[in-house]
Length: 274
Image (tube, rainbow, N blue to C red; front, side):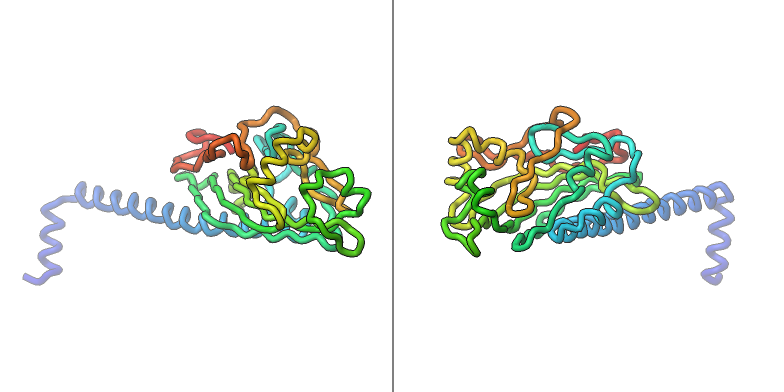
């Protein structure tokens, strides 16, 4: 008996019900594999979204961040938190951070991404990701402007008659993503500064100086950026209390993982919100 004949006999013996069960099982297998392929592809797409965010952020091209990377106006649940002062919970207040962000001459930001940990929901509609970001931030401040800021922020010398600030910085970003119109977009945003130090000072000494001088508290916690002539610009008024608190390096605190790391989840209702 040929192999085809044996297969036909075997199929006849199993009957139509067994064949239907096998077909159904194969369909489920194909559906599961398709879902996993889509989730794997989503991970790469999400990495690209946040990499693009950092490239645009460092180039002060915030209008592209607003239009290309954040969820659309009117999206329910949008939020951003940058400090322990509180959270922004409307599309307009979240975008206020990006509006009119200047690009002064002599200012440089370089942020590079490390340690991506990304979990895509099994339903493929949302995702969570966290990164460590390391880099440098530097610029020039007019003397009269620098006089109003903590002197620990600056180097001892001047360039073109201006005070120089050159900082090492490390941060953690934790972001929830929402899929809108087949595109992954930023939905909930957290940024936590891990540590910071001027080029000529280590981060332990710098942290101790910030802690010791109460007048520098707002600079250490609510500084958004240095604008034209190095003028400090602070974060806009918040909409509500912080979702959780997290601190830059301090000499009187132990290190913690905050925000928490993402864990596998089926749908967003089963997980926490960044």
